[in-house]
Amino acid sequence: MTTWLIRRLIQAMLVVLVMTVVVFLGLHVIGNPIDILISPQADQAERARAIASLGLDKPLWQQYLVFLRGALHGDLGNSFVFNEPALRLIAERMPATMELAVTAVLLSIVLGIPLGLYAGLYPDRAMSRTIMAGSILGFSLPTFWVGLMLIVVFAVELGWLPSTGRGTTQALFGVQWSFLTWDGLRHMLMPAVNLALFNISLVLRLVRAGVREIVLMDYIKFARAKGLSPARVVFVHVLKNIMIPVVTVIGLEFGSTIAFSVVTESVFAWPGMGKLIIDSINVLDRPVIVAYLMMIVLLFVAINLLVDVLYTVLDPRVRLESKG
Image 1 (cartoon, one colour):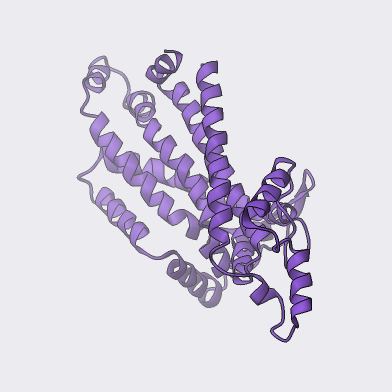
Image 2 (cartoon, one colour; image 1 turned 135 degrees about the vertical axis):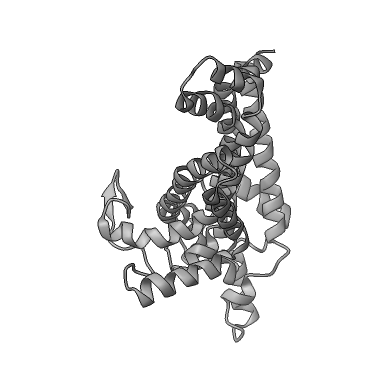
């Protein structure tokens, strides 16, 4: 197990190193931030001073080495626009995005797994067919359109929920959180539901497919023949054996939810990392974009590693293979 974990950590570090090259080179072929940050009326001397102050006068390989050296010390450069450390800007916006993403994933678990179990155990009932039809809508409807419809219905027409902003926050461990106040929860409800809609449909259909496959297995028939209660058969034998693909999807979708929360944060003016990255892309603020992308890469690598570890907990066969 220890050897396997060390090998996975080495692989993770190699992936992060390769992604630094891809991200850094990719951003340097999409445009020149000087054309946006400096006034067109500036003379050549002013442009040269600005280019030198931003470190863009060096060859690309030297810029990458400077970036890599700073990254090893926790410094991903200063924002061209805010003139502050890019990592600090990301860290200030991260709690808003994280609580939104965690709430969305929790909603997908709390709603997706029970609905998927019901649809899988009773596939011929009208409620099950309604659930599956609703899951198709969850896949099909664009996130931005759903967000706008939620604002129109619940904020404009009914006036039940606020449409934008984060609401009142309260500090916990030195970080401001919305879920600790009633006003913050009201502001968070619509964007969290909007962000969770696709994940709920995905988890629901995955659980339903797993249940339909597992209930036909011989060990389920044997458990029922032994006289075990239906609840024990479902929650001990059925649910446990379908959790590996569910854990995989939930883990990967958690990273995707954070990475692709840009649309939801833009629609609801949620002050998270997604809105920051959109503003940074508009002005080609390279350090902030690189810092954001590297944070997402580290997040995905960490989630993949955590999912692999959870495999060994859920499936004894994986533990045996890892020891081998």
